[in-house]
Amino acid sequence: MNFLYERITYTFDPLQHLWENARIHKKISVGLVVFFLGALCLIEIKRRGLLPAEIGGIIPNNHFYAVQYAFTVVLILEVISLVFTLPCSFSRSVGKQFEILSLILMRNAFKELAQLPEPVTFEGSREAILYIISDGFGALLIFGLLGLYYYIQARVADEAMRPRDLYSFVAAKKGIALILLGAFIFMGVNSAFLTLTRTEHTDFLYDFYTLLILTDILVVLISQCFHPSFFTIFRNSGFALSTLLIRLALAAPPFYNVLLGAAAAVFAILLTMISSRPFILRKVKN
Image (cartoon, rainbow, N blue to C red; front, side, top):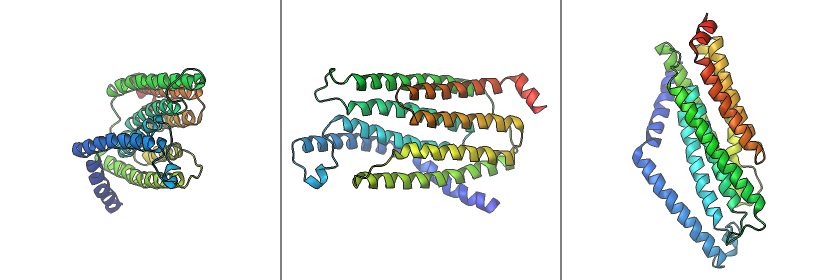
C-alpha cells in the first residue's frame, strides 16, 4: 500500500502545485476577460445577422448570456479548486462547497438577466426580477454565514493523528481527488458536446454535486480506518449531511434554494460550535 500511496502523491502534488501557481491564475484571469469580450462580440455579430446559419444557431441573441457564460467558467474553476482541497481537512472541503453554492446562487441571478428584454424594462419582467433578488440576497446570506463558519473553524483544532496514519489518509484522499478530477473533466466534455449538438441535458455541475455527496460519505468511511471513534464519524457524517442539503438546494426552485442553502450553512456552523466544546470532547472520548 505504501507504494500506491507514494504514486498517488507523486501524481497529485505536481498537479496541485501547477493549479495553485500564481502565474497560471493570472493567465486564467486574463483568458476569462478575453472570453467574456469574445462572447459579447459573437452575440453582437449574431444579432446583426453576420454569422453562418450553422454557427448562429448555437449563439444566443441576448447580450446577458455572455455574463452567464463568464460566471459558469468562474464556477468551473472553483469546482476544480474544490477537488484540490479535498485532501485537506473535512471542514475546509465543506467550506469550499459553501463558497461554490454562493457562486451558483449568484450565477442563477445573472442567468435570470437573460430573461429580460434589451433594453431592460420592468413590465413583463417582474418574475425574473424577483428571482434575481432572491438568488442575489441568498448568495449574500451564504457568503455571510460562510464568514462565520470560517471564523469558528479557525478557533477549532483538528484531532491529532499519528504521522504514518495521517500520510496514508491524506494519500487516500488525494487518490479520490484524482478520480473526481477525471470524472469532472469527462462530465464537462460530455456536457459541451451535448450543448453543441443541441441535445437537452441537465447542468453537469449539479450532477457533479451528487458525486461529491457520495465522495464525502466515502471519505467518512475511510477516515474510520485511520481514526476510529464515535466523535470523528459523527462530526464528519454531519458535514456530509450539510453537503446533502447543499445538493437539495441546487435542485430546489427559487426561494426554496436559498432556505435550504442557509439551513445547510447554519447546520455546519452549529455542528462546529457544539463539537468544539471542551466538555463535549471529554464526554465523547471517554
